[in-house]
Amino acid sequence: MIVMDPVLETSETSGFTHWPVADLPAHGMLVLSGELSPLEVGTAMAILATYNDPGDDGAGRDGGDGPLVGGAAGLIRRLLDAECVLAQGGVRVQDLESGATLEPGCCFGLESWRDWLDFTRGVTPWLGHSPEPYAEHLGSVVRLWPDRSLAHSPTTDPRPLDSRPADTTDLPPLELRTADLPDLLTDVQDKLRGFLRLVERWADRYVPSLTSALVAKLDEDLGIGGPLAADE
Image 1: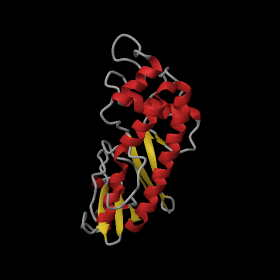
Image 2: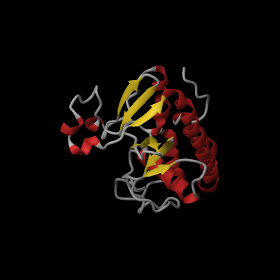
Image 3: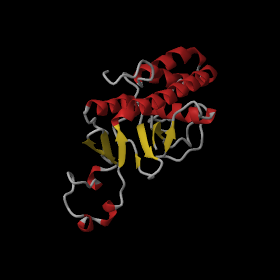
Image 4: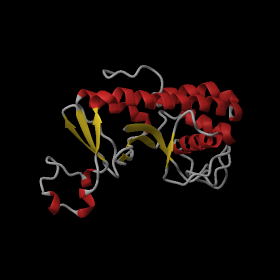
């Protein structure tokens, strides 16, 4: 069974003081959905706001000598002023039967999640780097390798299995039917819509004057609303 989740890469938030956040480890993955706790929503907003603030050091502090100017409202206003909200993370793909997982590559953020629809048109979207995922089109199936450098198949590695490096022979790829992608991405969209509803509640509490603008900004820049069509 294949599952796709919209995720944010978590960052260090121990020094963040503008609003309450969850104590999550850095460089993990936070699944965005309508099931998040209030503290997890706070963490997600801290990640988005600090990542898109050029004057921030990544932990809700100014890179200079003092605290960020304007507190919570100031930080959210700078998020609203961003040309386009960038979200470190993306779409995580898991095969619950084999245990294979494809984590989002760097620089292919959550704002690009709709690019996965390219596979339904026979096109391979760029899925980021470090590691760089690798995809093969095999008829109605897309085979996804978590890391191009470890991919092995008749087309990517002609060597016999017994002559390949030991750390590659057991690396399972994911096999994804292109016909299933629209439904899988609809699930991603539903989770993002649930997250956006939680953001609205969160903003009503911490930045009430900016609620409407914040919801509209995230909706537009992360491509949450609107129809999900294979021909878009």
